[in-house]
Length: 169
Image 1 (cartoon, rainbow, N blue to C red):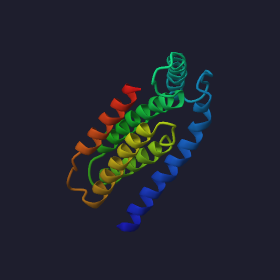
Image 2 (cartoon, rainbow, N blue to C red):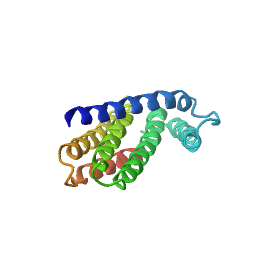
Image 3 (cartoon, one colour):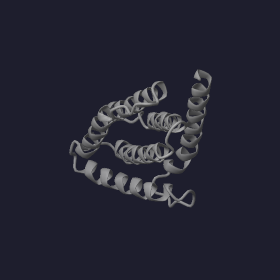
Image 4 (cartoon, rainbow, N blue to C red):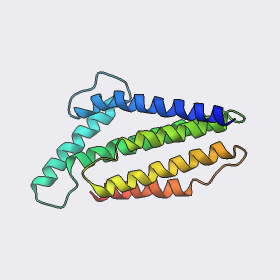
């Protein structure tokens, strides 16, 4: 059983790393139009808008968040929404395989979030790490005891913190 769980989690981590590596080149341009995957187009357009807004806000001399931190906030919010949607789909599978799928999706979501934890804003980094940690803990709880549904209160609190930090910038 542990070997199966390890195999599933390893596969999810590798898939998340591969997806994160593929998306990194497309999102680095920010202001260039998207010709790739359908889901990355709106995120890039929003990123370009966030960068333009941050640049104009920074010109006023306010204590606005840097452009890369605002862009990271946009990507982080999108990744959280995507991960939670994938978890919801995995929960529909039901037992006995559903708990492994949910665990794998939480692990993949956490891995995807760690990609965005290296911004110039420590508050954004810390909030993102808390969401990733909460997702990792939920993945472990789903893998350890498939018959129970763990509380998502810590994850919900961490997501609200990310939203608050990003809105404050």
